[in-house]
Each structure stands twice: as structure tokens, then as C-alpha cells.
Length: 267
Ligand SMILES: [Zn+2]
Image (cartoon, rainbow, N blue to C red; front, side):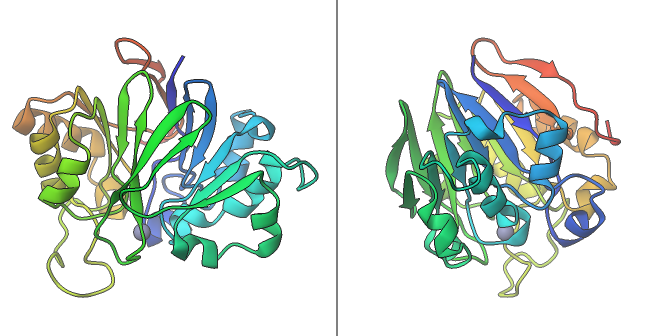
């Protein structure tokens, strides 16, 4: 069974420091491979609260070096390697990510993979491609997982046609829609390169997945009822769209079903 679990759906500075939504990232089980993707602050604690088998992880993946994605990576490497006592698992990250990981933690897994956009790699039998992003971490990437369905995690980025093309034919499209409206779009400042709802709609119209899942919400989204914004995306694109909740699990093996609806306060 292939599942996507949104351990946390928060992102950005204020959601991180308030934990109004958890910034715990995603736990994936795809083709028998257990992956923790973008473990932000709280990932370890929230994953333990949900009884996730962290000692059985096959891989920890970090898309870029911002704190809401990388913060708990080292402690999850310790969980995966049983306290760095057993050489096991793979750690995948970008050049920028590796700079923030200690040598001790890079030595602990079986292998460490430094990826850039366009790189193809395997985790067990699972094929993955790293994809381009346009973000303040210039080394940042997204990922496309070739499981029973093609699952695209577009990562932290603004919209571009080129990025859409990299995710063409995705069945499940996961969008980190941090902003409702990114008022600084196009400006060359720190926070300008985050996706907003308008970008999300453009990605969905280009890619036309079977299902779009919005997540990684900043305060601007959290306080504006993201589930209503998901309906808006669905109306404008004709593509089934949901706003993930903290703890929500999707079974994507066959027809996509919700296994657990999530226990977040904002439902
Ligand atoms: Zn970021």
C-alpha cells in the first residue's frame, strides 16, 4: 500500500514559531520504502506521538536548507540509524542542506546523496527525480516519486512553466502553498519566492493531476480557511483539490482514499 501522511502542514516563519499548524513535514510509504520528507521543527515529537516507525525509516530527504524543512533532519537520521550505531538508510539533500548537517550525521547512514535539479536516483525499488525550484535557497529542489502513482512534491517555489513541465503527468500533485497572495512576487527580496494560490492554480492548470493536495501553509493561509481555498482551486481548474490537515493520511495505491482525516485544530 502506498500512503502519504501529512504529519504537519505548516510552513513559514510564523507557523513555525507558533505551531498553529505543525511544521513536521511528510511521511511516505511508497513501494515498501519508508521516507521522511522535509522534517521541520516538531517532526520527531509529532511522528512519535503518531507512533511512526522511525527506526524502520529507509530514507530522510530534505528539499532545501530552510529551518521549516531541515530542523529535525539530524535527529531523524539518529532514529533511522538507531542512535548512529547501525549503518542503515539513505540521507538525501542538496548542497545547501549538507552544509548544515554535521559530519557525524553524514557518517551515520549507509549512504548520503547530494542532489540537484534533474538528478535521478533510487531508494530501494523506488525511482525518484529531483526537480528545479525557484526559491531563496538556490540549491533547493522538488521531487517526483514514481510509485504506484506518480507523486510530485513541487517544493518551495514560485510558478514557472519549466517547473510545470518537470511535473507533467503527475497523478498526485503536492503544492507548498505558503501564501494566499504573495504581494512581493517578482521582487528580489527574501520572502518573494514562495507559492501563493494564484501560482498553485497555474501549476494545476498546466499539470492537470488526478488530485492536488495543498499544504505547507503560512499564517496568511492558515487564518483564511485553506479548505475553502482548495474548493476555489477545484472550481477554477476542474481538478479535485484538498487542503491537507495535520495528521491526514492518503492511500494512493488505487483510487485515492483518505485513510485518516487528520486531527488538526483547523479541519
Ligand atoms: Zn524555503
